[in-house]
Length: 276
Image (cartoon, rainbow, N blue to C red; front, top):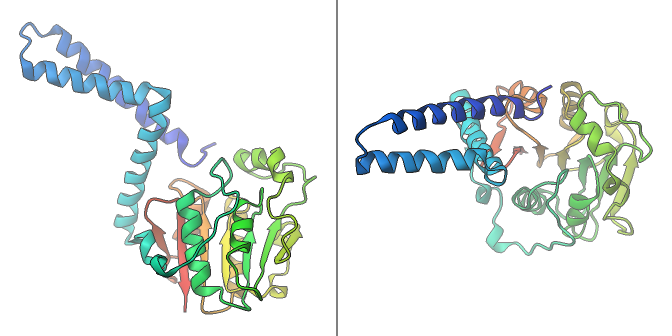
């Protein structure tokens, strides 16, 4: 099973390492050691150390994935936008509380993008809908940035749910203890809804902003997207998390490009759609 394209990148990196070994062998066999050859050998050694060092390999792989993603998006005609274009951040007074970036959460940049869009579209009296509460990290931080007459509605599977999702990555998140220690508990403007998002009637919710980060298999992402598009108020916005190449999320989003101006937010794993 491919998890966010990891298997394809492991193959690429193995090929790179193999190629580097061949180059080093050729250099060792050279009788004349010029300074140019020595520098080339040094550069190859540095590249090899980056790829093989577990601490650096992740960073190198991540940057290669971003470059690959950008090229594919450009070839597909998808708009790539700067995060700073999403809102007038210089004029915003944003708060953060117990924000953390660990597995299962948005990055700090992604969180700031969502908060900026929330300030832009979820004005006083309007609401935000989140699919995939997890540990309440994003829920809490949206909650404290809403106006007094607004709320966030957040949907999550019941905490005693058996991990029966199609993707192993989703199942492992369901089993994590952090999911049972939600950070938003006690906040009055949070409405927690427990249930399967694909079976919930979204017409009961009133919202102008939405974040889709529930199950990541094709059918779940497809149904969550349909339900949000059918019921969101305009003007408003939708953000999809864990958008990466070679995934079901990417496949669903690709089917929408011709009908909606969905944009990839540079430096993130997120795409957004602003509806006016």
